[in-house]
Image 1: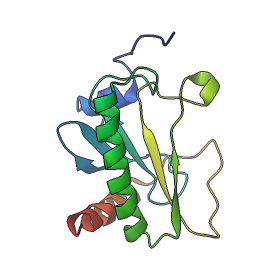
Image 2: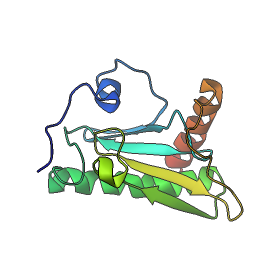
Image 3: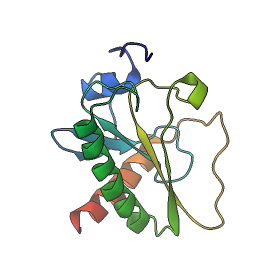
Image 4: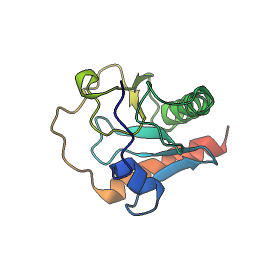
Amino acid sequence: MTPAYDDANVFAKILRGEIPAHVVWEDDHTLAFMDVMPAVDGHTLVIPKAKARNIFDVRPADLARVISVVQMVAVAARTAFIADGATIQQFNETAGGQEVFHLHFHILPRQSADRVRPLPRPFADPKILAAHAEAIRAALATR
């Protein structure tokens, strides 16, 4: 059984505006923003606005909306970072590698020869994150 959703998680705080984020996309159901400890340049997170701990308890309609935005942002990130491909990651519960217990997808635009930054990763410079967010927003605007 999946534990209850915790409103104190960092993504819930971002949704409430208690923690700032470099937003690349927002609609009535989803939010996409830059990961503050990026594995690669352009590392973006997409979350539902609905309370969902992970894949085990998300409503199918909310999941459909999120995955649609994941695809849209992945295409934009690929364009913005002139990437050869992308890695999409999603983790569930501690045993599955989940660290923040609000459903989220990682989008990592990838180059053939790049390397993912190892854990633990440092916080990125906010100016760099802002520039990366702007590049993805610009690519989204041309879709």
